[in-house]
Length: 395
Image 1 (cartoon, helix red, strand yellow):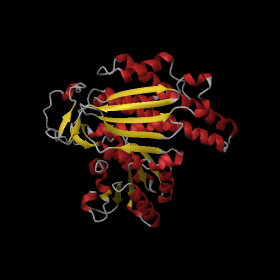
Image 2 (cartoon, rainbow, N blue to C red; image 1 turned 135 degrees about the vertical axis):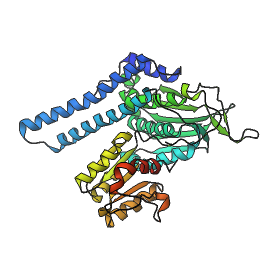
Image 3 (tube, one colour; image 1 turned 30 degrees about the horizontal axis):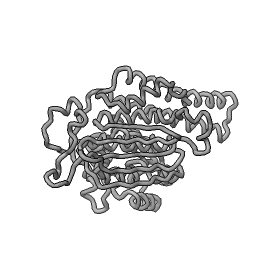
Image 4 (cartoon, helix red, strand yellow; image 1 turned 30 degrees about the vertical axis):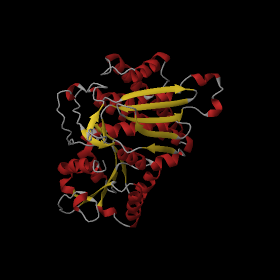
């Protein structure tokens, strides 16, 4: 595992969260890059130890195999977060300003991750008022998923979520509360030291995504409890005389590339950031899996591959991806069970069926069963656009 952040690093991270001052400094990004290297190198060093043991003995026990798999997964996750952070640091983001139903999107994220929370034995308690905000839909989705990644990784209790409005001027306020250490360790002298998970790369992603959006992240860590408050500056109020109008627009400066925009809030062409979205490819043919993966490799997706519907069902037990792309030859009883099971939890879940024969590209809105379809012939050119629509339709 990577070494925990130093006191100065953790203090700097906390200060950046609680003292919003626009764009992060070069020094802050340098700290993030250093932390990224540590969180990739640590797990890979552990994995290399297991590989060397395997080479020297010619065998590996189940515990070592599990450790090897977990270490590679940790390094992979750190790399994926690094890609998302690089996207935020690039300065090339063009943020949209669209009216988003924050409550519905948050509930969708929680539904998407219900299997994961159940598998970990973590209860997510929620008190959510219906609230709309003006925000970039792509980053909003990323922020809520990053928040859940960080909270689920850090908690030693349930995770409490509350969404309400601040007193006038009204602003949407999302509060996430959890215990960052076990209650039976609170009397331990070391309890004053913050666990490394609180200032891990997953926290950095929450923090920097919020700052990029102009959302104020306020975090308090005290007596074993962490409380993060995300305050959204542009909230849609339905009060008399203010219907559809964002409030608190002067509370935080808009990003530089947004300051010159007028008051029209139009949907963006990328309502959900594909960077960080998770797609499972299901095909028994390696060449088809490779073709699908090559077609979408530029989209910033997290991609996993399995060879059968039974493997797909097993993969989904611990947590759902955001979409499944599968070859038509695997349709059968196993698929129908998986399809029905997932739609019970997430009615807008993205399924894309890849057919061998010539076929018109169809979005889910144009088919009787609500499933997108594409011919293998059109995968290189059309699959990215199909996924862009299908992964965004739930927002």
